[in-house]
Image (cartoon, rainbow, N blue to C red; front, side, top):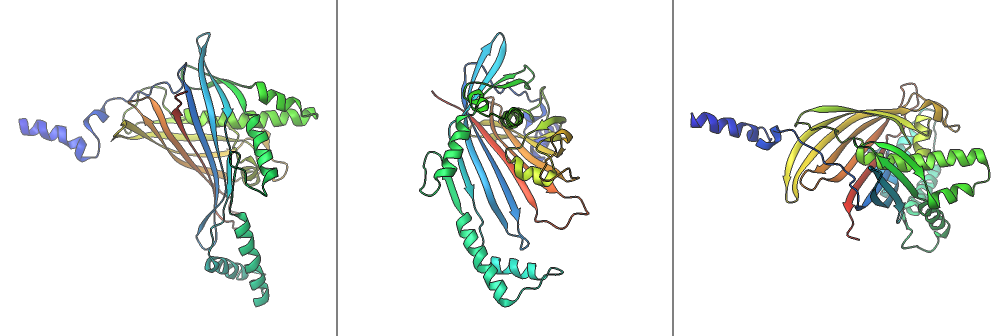
Length: 344
């Protein structure tokens, strides 16, 4: 009898699950009144060239200060930007550049002489060298004065206030202070309204990224739940808009509590996210026009059950182009964030 009991206890371990993982896992409220947090958001665009080499060509990292308060029984979250770091890179060796040019020369209707191939090689190599740069608002570099000024203006106008419901969703989101001042400076009322909607939408979407994939009730390992987000404004809206044809997307995703791992900092819940995103019709891009292209989403959320803190969110959105389009280089848009408490 003892042997049977011992086997019953050991079996979940043999399958890779700790005994206490059979209990329902509860997720503490993410934003709690009286706290100051640092939400670090990063977005990246990655292209895979015809030779199979991934080349990250743009990224933006922005630490956001988050202050949580309680007003009339509601949790309010104030967001301001602290810094911005933008980077561009095209990691290509001479051999890879020549291989890309050779593959291009084999396309139907393309004829390149040796001289033209050599000229393209020199131009691409020079462009690659020029593209490798990092722009940091706190560490300005000579030659990037205009980019630094634009970034500083953007982060200086990040001043938003959100109301988070008891169930962990955003019940309200509005510009305030410096953000309102920046919007009021725009003279054209039509452009002002559109710009305010997109800017507010982008930062609401960032805050929502931290909340959207967490369950609003206890779940067990292996259980799933559905997530529907009717309107997401990607930070890299221009690139997404050119592919999808819309400046905003909607998302349907399935989340699954994959495991609960023991770590030195306590038990960490691992949530896997799969889903897709499509364009929101009312936000068609004038530049690209509506398309049937979509984004396929895959990602992971880590949540520390001991501290009640979000460890990280990492979502990769891969462009899926409609069949009748010409072949394109695969594009992946990566959004990730971390959330840590501040001591002051």
